[in-house]
Image (cartoon, rainbow over all chains, first blue to last red; front, side, top):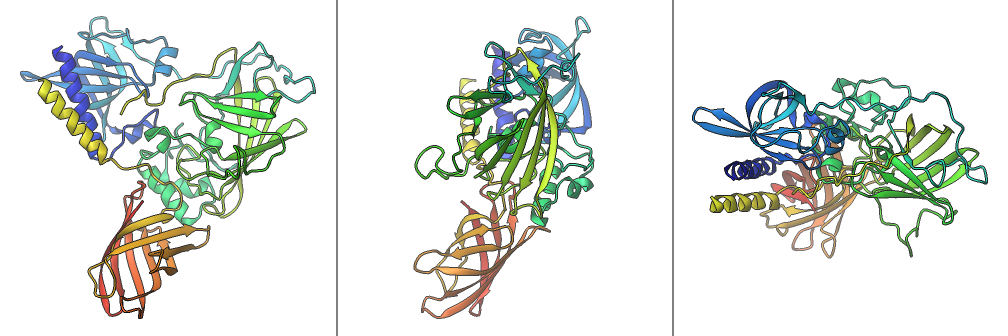
Length: 375
Length: 133
């Protein structure tokens, strides 16, 4: 009971500190937004509680200091990542002696991002996470098709399931440009910012500011805002296409986040009045219409709002954004994606980016509640 | 101990109520801004500015309604996020007055970011502060 009370106080204290300093609690985020990789630290102590919740799991550890104990929050990967690697809520228990090596929080609070988490009694390292890799493809399988020969973008048959993941690029960068970034779009060298896309001066300055703040203001992670635009196709947990042929529309479901989705209409309608009446409210996923050009689905999406980041890494956009996207499935396991970005409010010209995604067969799209109802 | 937990909970709640709102992530000047620009003998204390961005220029209105004034010039210098605004208004007697406002954006990442600086016009000058709504 004493440990639980102590943990509750520390959680409340950390929350108050985070809110008070206007540094938001982050979801499945760029780690450097919250933690400083120039400040390594090691703690040894006794587990007081395990908080197995999204977006990131926390283990609370009492560390002896003189005659007292300080309660530390050790942050780990997401439940999805940990579960995939064989770990569970039962991997450690209150009372276990542990040693954790990691990096400290930027705001000076008693939080540590774990790089190595060991059980003292056995010396066993736990909560390790291997980099997810796309399943190997032994031979190319033909593109699955509907009876009218149109390619299927979703499951290859009515009885199968699967989704698209493992994008070959995880941040939006103009085709032909080579810059080093983290998987969340954080530039290794901020001097590369002007190369990423042809931004107007204000957009470049804002992009630099977001990068300088280690992407800490990303509304997708702070407020669980939908990752509209091409970002939906660059998140780590993939997307699923559900084709409603009868009603001529495709649902593009988001993996690993809240259960929101984009709709692509193929019935010839325009960009307005999609829901009813003269509905033209700006939307997170915009208003998307599409048609097949041979084996390629071409979509035209506009009507975006400005309340989200449309890329990992924080490239700005305005409500003048129009996206032309091309989806091609050359074989069962490959999706070629190309996007043309036209936003005269933020960019000096139209520009393009492209990448591929990999088919994950016979599995359901990973789901999680973004913040698990955390405050 | 229970009382301590309750106090901490209330503390958290009080911080949460002052936490910044979600950011408006597009052009930083776009939106409705409300604040003050007094004291002055020329005009009332309240100031409302509505600005839009078409990709090339900022347009806007000041105090929409009976005291409506169209923005003549509004610029944003991203080097330091400096804001410059010019418009022709009227003083309390109905006489035309040209105003110039120069300020700086603070809290760029937040929806309720602010512009604060100085105004001058009609032989007067003072401070102003606007907050995005």
